[in-house]
Image (cartoon, rainbow, N blue to C red; front, top):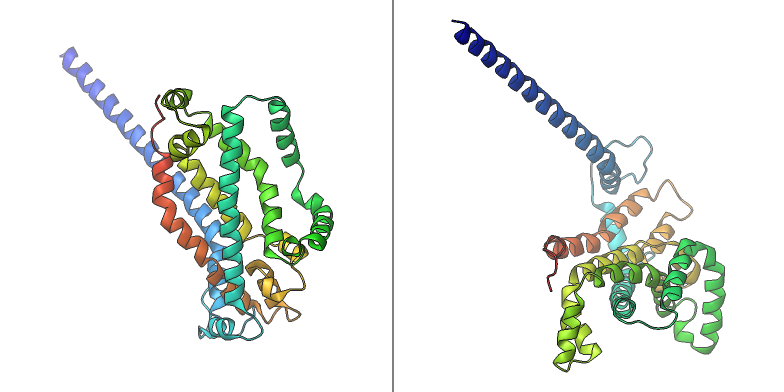
Length: 305
């Protein structure tokens, strides 16, 4: 009888514990969902507000709700067909500058990272440390020096001077070289050196080792660096404002949208919001096109020698 009683007590205690853990699991899940919901609302509210502003025909943000009264496409039509605001040209300029900058940043960064990872030469550590220390200081501190430098270069080579896309791209490449080199070097170091030695035994040159063997293995970090370079360049405002000002045909999207606001700050918000949404399309398309490649590359197993 006592054994039956103890078994019943044990079963009751086990059921009580299971119920306690079930309630605790549900509480933790509810708390997580609440935190996620708050984070999503916090992140998406500005986007929803911009979308609402773009469809608001009044063009004002005063007293505006998330759902505008009498939504209209008037701002999109005006922006795309306006003679005062060459919006498609601004988008093209930003896409062109960002694409060239991202491509060159990836190639130059990969070459420099491969050199620092695989070769041993005098001053290697000092040069790496110098590149790292230079990145500590914000680029905005050198804006005056960059302006004067491009002004001097423009007197010799006008195509790379002020108010030119080539000059702006050159500045972007110089600023991104240090970060990209450090980021890629860490990834290059994970590639086994046995691959290099095997290729050398077969008579491959250093360039063949880099381009045929190493380069395909580091595509995940190349994709990440390319996307970061593209997005950072596409949304930059300070450097185009300083280096391209005075040439409306050379303006980037960010600089052009600042002109849209103009003096009538409260009356052009609709145009600004419409331009911001249309201008974000290349970024969205790029992420959608490359997300599978990026996720697949970053989730692959470690490279084995």
